[in-house]
Length: 302
Ligand SMILES: [Mg+2]
Image (cartoon, rainbow, N blue to C red; front, side):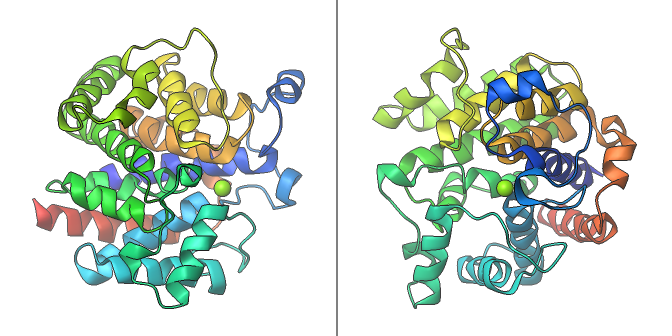
């Protein structure tokens, strides 16, 4: 099941990165992550996912319930997560980005969903990129809708384009039997054509030109994250190696590994995700039920 491939890959990547979030590359070179860990940064048990997975699941729940994209309802489900701990494993919300929480508070205080997101250049963390994967499964999704879903919390054009690029890579992987390099370059061509003349495209040049010779920054800035994800996918040849590489670059380890793991899960398939990592994640059976519901909805959209 394609939804299960990507979403499981995403959540496993998230859980791998949670115990070492904010660790430096140097620290992880000294003591690299090679298996699912426990405790660490947030003192959470083994297999705990974070905001990335919770917001991804919230998005899927809303789309199933509303039989499509309902911006107000997605934001309501995000608030249910942030303030009521829905979509978390342990009734606890321990990881939430600044731009995200500001957007959710604006919505809670009465702003319309599409007017809640931050729009300054400082609002370009990876907080919308980390929850956009479900849209890739909707075959007729258009760019404006992807941009709007990003804009619920992250309304700057840079974040929106990053989300569209990520969804296009995922869609290519879902549709075509190509190499990783081909999937990425096809998606890049679509983005360059659609946003032709838009100065924000310059921010993506290293990805377009496949030139990471001046290093990879693996922090929480949306461009750093999409670069990290593309780099890790291009330079590995298995699910396991891709997500471990994303984690061991340090910085925003959970989000980078989650976003990388979503694509690696689709590309390599569920069976290539280490089974002991999958089994270490509590409540994954409920996630897989949600994946089945979501796939049924997406099949109806065809
Ligand atoms: Mg997180």
